[in-house]
Amino acid sequence: MKNIVSKLIFTTFFSLMLFSCQEDYLEVEHYNIVSPEALAEADPTKTMTQLVNGLYDTFYGMESSGTKRDWHFKPHVQLGNMPAMDCQAGGWDANWSKFGWLADDGFFLGPWKHCYTAINRVNVFLQMLENVDVAEVDGGQDYLDLLEAEARVIRAYNFFYLTINFGPVPMLETGETYSNTPDKPRPESTEAAWKKIIEDFTFAEEIIDWAPRNNEAGRITKGMVKAYLAKSYMQNNQFEMAKLQLEDIVQEGIYELEPCFGAMNAVSYRYGKESVWEVAYPEHENMNWSGANDDDAYWWVNNNMEWGSLFISHEWVEDMEVGDYRKDYSVMTYGNGNPYFELPENHPTFTSGMYVNGEVNLANNRCLKYWQECNMITKEDPQMIHYRKSALLMRYAEVLLNLAECKFQTGGNGWSEINQIRNRAFANLEVGLNSFPNGYDAEAIIPSPRETGMPVIVPDAQIFYTNYKNTKGYSSEVWKVALVQERRKEFVAEYTVWYDLTRMGMAEEFLDIEYPLNGRYSKRSAEYDEHFDIFPIPNEEILTNDGISPADQNPGY
Image (cartoon, rainbow, N blue to C red; front, side, top):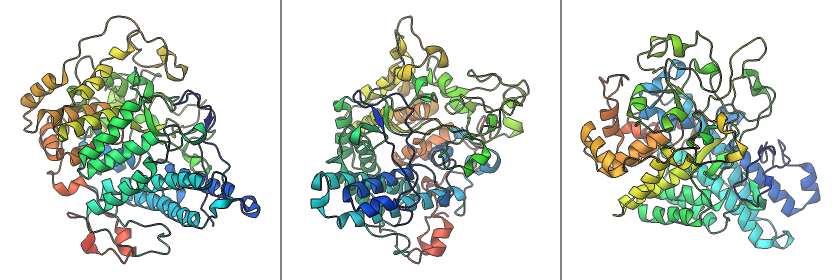
């Protein structure tokens, strides 16, 4: 049973709960192997509970897969954002701004190995669960079903991530791991892969409650399951089924848009009312490069934002409407300082002009979503590289925009949901706001929320994007243009933009219009080709899995 349960960190110092009755956080003892005491006691309830708790550890990066430091930054932000070009990279990551990634790129092998490590653990756990005597378990079959549901969601979540990035991947079943099933082939179609993923989410959706088990924030909830089940249906072109799941989330009334968009960027944001699924990170004493030797999980951010992958294009900045606060909450434009702390006079934001170090493709605008703490090198402070902000992987804003898409796809009208997002973007929900999530001081949010004044009239989404479509020269339906633009404004440097573009068939048109080959600012260096919609199967997988040959590689790689 070695390595079934690993380290699990959902720390106890976070102060805001998703549910008002919730007073605990997911906090369990953790071991590199299953606790000998638990096995000696032969208590099936305690043992299986410990085992399923250990599965949650896979939501963090793991040293064995090479993703320990930055699992939710690389690959998540890069694979989900970089090809759309609003979020840009330089240095070692420059190929992501040039569509120059290759099948031997570590950005693909890392997530592949990480996800299958998680899937292996789940499959071993589920096989063990089948042999448990239900009469010896507190809570009986209902409790075992709940543990199975959580485990199957973790498996489905990892297969979901693999499939949106690589297309159909080997779908290991209960009891199967890469050790005992080393030559599993890919399924015949992407639809077959989504069917398996949907089966796991559907099983859990009937069992898991809206409140997390034991009221411990950080556990899987029905809202999380329904949100990812809906996305799975959408990826499989089952929009009516997706709409039902999303409507359930809205009608339950648990989640809301945070009144202040900037509040969610704060380092202290934990399990707020917009958080449908997040992974919270702790702060520890050593958060510099050598922190990788510690036993803690990290959130990665680059040194003082002088290099790396959180540069935001001039095109994105220009496309933001006057009065849309998401611009100021999300980006520090060149020539301006970080509003949260003072920068030295020689910082590149002041000295490099429009482009960082003369790199034509790399705009000198820096994302503020992950840069609200000073990590400069001084005599008094060490070089702080890692960052403990939550990975806010599914927000209620995404639920609303996905619901809007499903309504349009099924002949309905989703403008109401889009206008809700825009109303918050123009800070109308902030007017009169006198309390903040986690007890935030309003002065700590940049720009300060509009506590006084009157709501502004927000340009109607349908009217605004009809004009935008005509001005820019889009040929797609207005609602598609609106969803593309609202998602890029809302989720820049987050997790979903590229996947939404490719699912909607909008990637080519978007790039040709917003980032043409001879564009005004960013110089896209490759013609769009549909093979860019998904990424290559890692070379190592093809070399080591006899069930996958070079002929099975995704087209174009």
